[in-house]
Image (cartoon, rainbow, N blue to C red; front, side):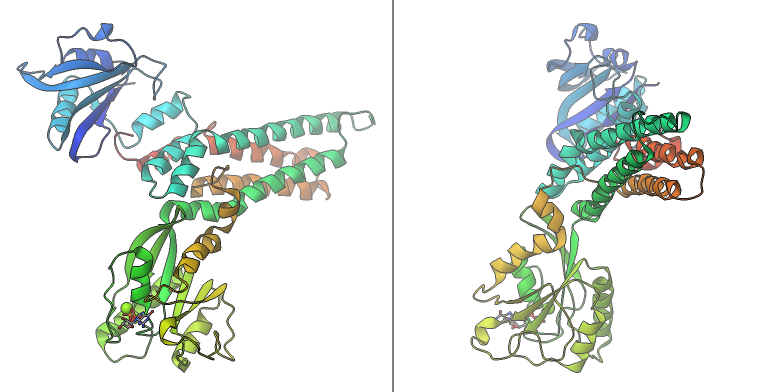
Length: 457
Ligand SMILES: Nc1nc2c(ncn2[C@@H]2O[C@H](COP(=O)(O)OP(=O)(O)O)[C@@H](O)[C@H]2O)c(=O)[nH]1
Ligand SMILES: [Mg+2]
C-alpha cells in the first residue's frame, strides 16, 4: 500500500492544522522534511520538529509531531500526525511538502477504509466515525459514540453467533432425525429462530428514529396568515429569524433553522400562511408550504385561539390527516376565557396534542418544547440513545434482509419444502449480518460508503 497524506482539520482560521500520513513510507517521507532523526522519535508522544521545505531546505513551520508505529495506530499502518500552525496556508504547505516527498493525496475516507481493511474497526464503527464527525446534537453525538464503542457490533455478532449455533443444531437434526436425545428438536430450532427474528425486528423498529437523529426531524409550522406562526418560530429558536408582521401574508418562502430540544435535533420550518391569494409570490409561497408539509415528520398547526376556521383551512387540515399533527390555539393572551372549542366542531382530525400558547406571555411554550422530543423520538427518549441503533440506510437494509431470510426459514419449516433447502435461508441471514459488520465486504460497498467521508478521515 502506498503512503497517503491529507489535512485532517478543516481549512480556514484556527490555531492548529493537522496533516496526517499513513503507510509504509510515512517515516521516510517525514525524514525528507527534517534534520531530526525520525526513527528515534518515541511513539505516541508529541515531539517538537522543525519542518523544512524539501526543495531549498528553508524553514517551513515549527510543528509538533506524533508518530504511531504499526499496528498501533488508527489505520493499523505507520501513521504520523503533524500538528502545524493553522489557517489556510500553513497546513496546505505542509501537505504539499509531504506530497513532494513521496506521499499520495488520500481519497475521501481512505484512512478509515484502511482501518477497516486492517481490522482496526468494522464497517459499523466506520459509519459511527462519520456520524460523530457530522453530529450536530447531543443525542446524535451520544448515539454515534455508543456504536463506535461497538454497541451495535456486539449485538450483531451475538445474533450471528446464535445463528451459527442454530445451523449446527439443524445439521444434527437432519443427520440424526431419529434420535430423541439429540441436542435440539425441530420445534426448539424454530422457536430459537423466531426469537432471533424478534430481536432483529426490534432493532429495525428503532431505525427510523436513528436515521432522524442524523439530520434532525422536520417540523413544519402551518396555519392561516397572521395566526402567529413566525412569532412562535422565533420563540422556539430563541432568536428573531422570521419576520413578524401584522400584515397578513408576510412570510412567503419557507425558512428552515436547526434547534435542539432536550438534546434531540429538529429542523424547524416556518411557512407562508394558507389562504386563497391572488398575489403570485404569495401563491408560490403557499405551494412551497404544501411541499414542506408533505415531507414533514411533524406538523404544528396554528390557529388563533378565538378565531373561527375557514373552509379553506378545514380542507387543508383534513388533507393533512396522515401526518402527525400538533394543534395549537395561539395568542391565548388575547383570548383568556374563550369558550371556543379547541378543535372546532365537525372537524375530523385527531392531533397528537392540542395546546394553547402565547408568544407574548409564554403560555404553553415550555409545554410545547417538552412535548416535541417525545412525539418524534418517543422510543429513544424512553430508552436513551446509548443503545444499539441502526443509523444508516445501509445498516437497515442489511438487518431487514437478514430478518426476511429468518422469517422465510421459519415459514418453510412449516411447509413441504425439504429442510435441507430451508436451512439455506439461515446461511443467507448470516451472510447479511457479516455484510453489515463488513466481515464480508464487497469493494463496491466500501467505495460507496467511503465516498461520503471527507478527505483526511
Ligand atoms: N397578542 C399576541 N399577538 C401575537 C402573538 N403571536 C403573534 N402575534 C401578533 O400577530 C401578528 C402576526 O404574527 P406573525 O407571527 O407574523 O404571524 P404569521 O403570519 O402566522 O407568521 C403580529 O402582529 C404579531 O405581533 C401572541 O401570542 N399574542
Ligand atoms: Mg409568518
